[in-house]
Image (cartoon, rainbow, N blue to C red; front, top):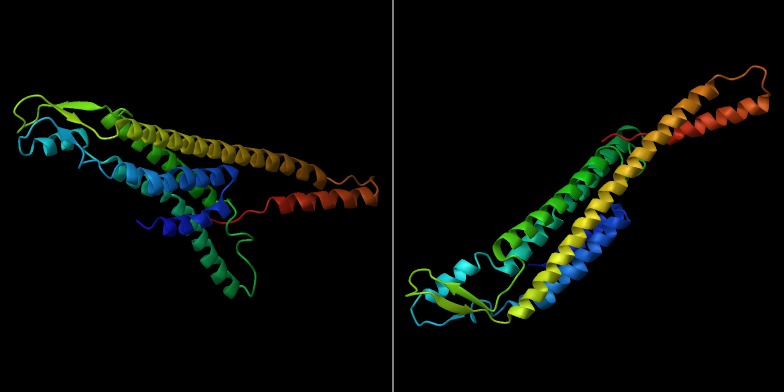
Length: 257
């Protein structure tokens, strides 16, 4: 897997992200991708080779290994990183779609722009961004559940197996179990931090959305009051009121999806 290409591709997402999103991206690449490439793959490289059972029965060790490791930790985490990072591409694709629409609009309307800033999280892009955060948190939570369901975040020294063609209950020994358990817990904690960052970013965006809505509602009420110009007021006051109303109208600029 070309992790550098994935980093370059998702690096563009940071310019559309909030502070929470940039922290999430840093955690993913520093504490998950980098640790996965540098350390975890090396720790698990002897996973099946050094899985030894105390019997010489042909096929017993393979059957016991498949029972205890239905899916390798390395492949599970690789799949998790791919699933978790892919929703960010939804935001990039939506921004590119906006840029294409803006280019067509400029051509048809002699230089006027459809979007002041195609990457600004307003309109449909805001919902796309929220949806991507939900997907990322959901995928991380789902893979954590799978890891817990299969291994309970543990790595025992010895596991017992009674599967055919083993002649009886045999003991099988896992290589470097303590080291593997430490990295398992490390990946669990880093995934939990990513979920926490996604939840914080969702609440942050919703809070900003609510605050903008309340501010626009307040400005709308204020604007309606400004339109009722007092004929006895001075011209300077009326001009000031009109300027405030104009500023409020400019703040209510809305962009299409």
